[in-house]
Length: 138
Image 1: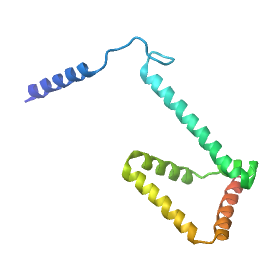
Image 2: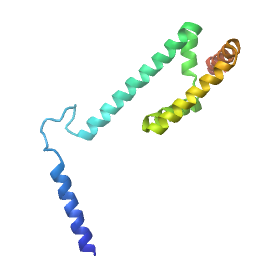
Image 3: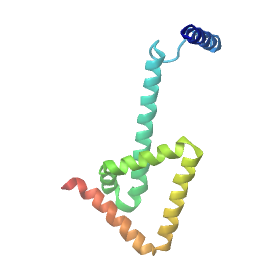
Image 4: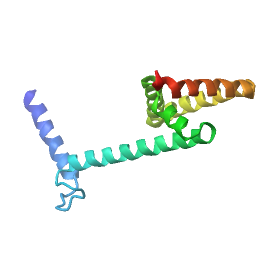
């Protein structure tokens, strides 16, 4: 039985080797190690995404709260807020049911907010964000 498994494993390895593209001498990137190059690209993309997200968040808040308060609001996000945002984004991008669940939740929240008066919504949002901006002052 063990010989059969070993033989099967060798056949599988040979199949994979046949399907792999021929190696090229020209590997794009700063090093010859493809794993290192992939890691560097991943870091660059994540850093760019982080910078873009922060800029968009501040830009959205700047018109209503001013430059300094908008910066403080974004800087004082709690770990919980960050984890919830990350988790929802991850869930929404993994598969269609996750995207439907997150999208459906956003629609339900929007409909709930629309049922409340505009003034009450603004007051609640302003109160939460101003508290968040001044959280770092303590």
